[in-house]
Image (cartoon, rainbow, N blue to C red):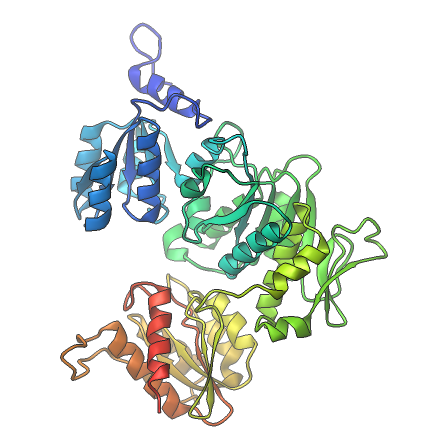
Length: 516
């Protein structure tokens, strides 16, 4: 603590003390100077919320966004746009914030957050802010928190779907697309919010005790594999971020018993006394586990006689009828079932929810047959772990791969699946790394590199998303033979050549539809 010449706190310390004590929607947020870093969907939700609470808000961001800029003006938020960190830092310092709220994409060592932290100014993510503001209505929702390298969105949606089937008012939020603050401001409130958490959001969660420490009702890390290593600085830091999901869990820590790292996260977590460890997996489950017995998904986690009995949920054949029987999808179903059962949803209600659930587009989405081959859009496979799950479910694959690898070496992925590859089409800005992995581990597999060039059409710019994907699909079709599956599972982020992974998937589907 900084002391004045008289031995008391200075103004900065008093400001920080006031901020850290704020633990309710109904506390006094008025007049607080809050800098919001980033003007994406999260940044805008933060600004909108804090303006409503009476704070003085200034959004600092790097890329113009006419629609959101206009909305900031309407709600009464200040804003500053500059594409360089020094300009943004100058504006931040001049504003003199009491609190900084950072959007998820800002690295832990970002100059703007480092500046604030060096001066003792609290820096929060939107999840901590949401936890402090969760009591806007009398209906204070339980939080069910989900993370993992792969499968987060599907499991989050499915868990919320199960909770609704159980008669609860529930919604998915967080990294899934609806900011947590938008969910919390719903005037009716919720019984439960299923919060998808990225490693970026988890990085900002505080440990220990205090008003801003998130305490989930139930939590899950679905799986763990290297990802975002460039952002976190290494696998240890990435693991530590993911492990935070289990901290202070109240009732159930759900983990993947086939993934030792998720089990270790639970073992090392500081949880509320009485919280149980509940496992899921594709094998026959132990007591306190969910699994598969003779083709039936079963719950031994919440049966009163779980040492000798189990609840039957659905069959693998029924999942196949819904197009969700691939091994990684079965794991997602089991994890969601465990989380919903923790919140009291009955087995029959869970079964009903599973059998009327439809996964999002671009997640192992079946596109049918073209030119004798089967086509699958798994554009959401933005890392090697997700691509591994898709490849593992198939036998003969023409694989469309590449994009932004985020510092991850995909050599192991290529080596693991070389035997099932009938051809590879390489896209993206980091093609050299993919080609090197193919040369090292699958040198005999035919491959085509898609180098961006002008398509010859005036309406399609050189290197555009449409031009890249059209050529990739045509190349894949030329490599595929009858009975093969052409799989878009890029094992990489999309923003080098596409707006996002849905855009990449849409471009793929459009190109497939044009095949003759």
